[in-house]
Amino acid sequence: VALFALALLAASGAEGAHGLLRPPDPNPSRRVPTPIVMWHGMGDNCCDPVSMGHLKGIMEASTPGLFVKNVMTGPNPWLDTVQGFFGDVNHQVKETCERLLNEPRLANGFFAVGFSQGGQFMRAVVQRCGGGVPGDGKLIVKRLVTLGGQHAGVSALPGCGVYDNNATLSAFCRAASEAVEHAAYSFLTRTTVVQAQYYYDPMDYETYLAKNQFLPDVNNERHDSPTNEMYKENLLALERLVLIRFSEDTVVVPKDSAWFGRYRAGTTIADDNLVQLRESDWYKNDDALGLRTLDESGRLVMFDCPGQHMAFGDNWFMENVMKTHLLDDLEDETVVGRGGGDERERGGVATA
Image (cartoon, rainbow, N blue to C red; front, side):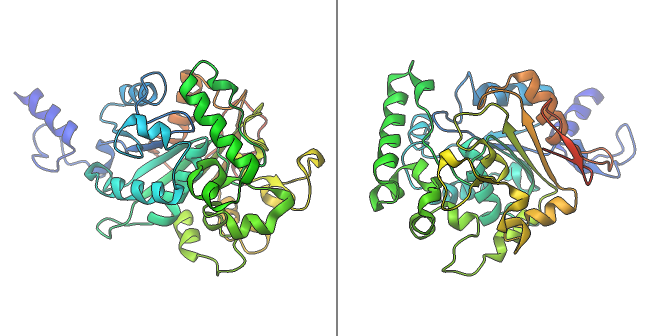
C-alpha cells in the first residue's frame, strides 16, 4: 500500500501527504519534469510513427513523468501534413497558442522545440503568446530549441526530391514550389502557400517587407510600423535560445538562416554574400529581437549538427539536444553547445 501511495504521489506531483515516507521536498516542482512541446517540419505531422510520434515516444520513455506534446494544426494528422504546405501561418500560430493555453499540463511552463519550418513557427508562438507567469493567460515558455530553422527566411525553394517515394507529398511540395517560384509575393501565394510566408528575395527586399505577411513581422524588421517590444520582451523571457544548424544543409538556402543569417539585400544567391547574425542590424543596431542581449547574457547557444537537413539519429538527438537542453538543470552551470560540429567558446556559450 505504501509503495502504491508513493507511486501515485510521484506520478501526480501532488503536494499532499508529504510525510508518508520522507520530509517535504524543498523544490517540489522538480518532481515532474518540465513538459516539452514540439512543432514538426514540412511534409511531416504531429503523430507519424516513424518521425514525430517516434521521437515523442523515446523522449517520454527516457524520462519518467515527462509529458511531450506535438503540435497539430487542423483537426487531424492528415490535414496537419497538408497545412505544412498550404495555409495561413499567422492563423496556425494563433490556433497553436490557443491549444497550448488550453492544455493544463503546460500551465507551469514548458520547453519548446521546432524542427525546420516549425522552428520559426514556434518562435512566433513564443513572441506572440509567451512571456507569461502562472495565471496571467499567457504561455510560459522556458527554453526554445530550433533545428534547421529558417529564421531569416529562404532564398531558394526547398528541394522536393526527398518526397519522390510519396506521390501525394511530392505533388504538394511541387505545387507549393511552383507557386513561390512564379509569384511569391502575389496575394494568393503569400496568403495560402506556407513556404512563401518565409521566402526572402534579396534582390527585392522592399517587396519582401511590404508583401510578406509573416516573417518581416515576426522578425521585427518592418519599416512602416514601430518595433513590437512585446516580441523582444517575450524572447528575453527565455532561459535559453538554442539554434542548431545542419552543417551540410542544401535544403535550407542559405543554411545559415538557422542562425539568423541571410543574403545581403541587393545581392544574388550566386554572389554568396551572407550577413551573419552578429553583423546584422537585428543584432548590432537596435537589437530588435533581443538576440544580442540573449547572447551577451550567455543565453544564446549556436552549434552544428553534422550532416544534411534533418538527418540526425535518435542517439545524437538524445545526447546533444534532449539531455543538454531539454531537461531541468539540477544546479546552475555554464551552458555550452554540443553537437560534434565546429564550435568555439564565446562568453560561456558555444557558437560557430
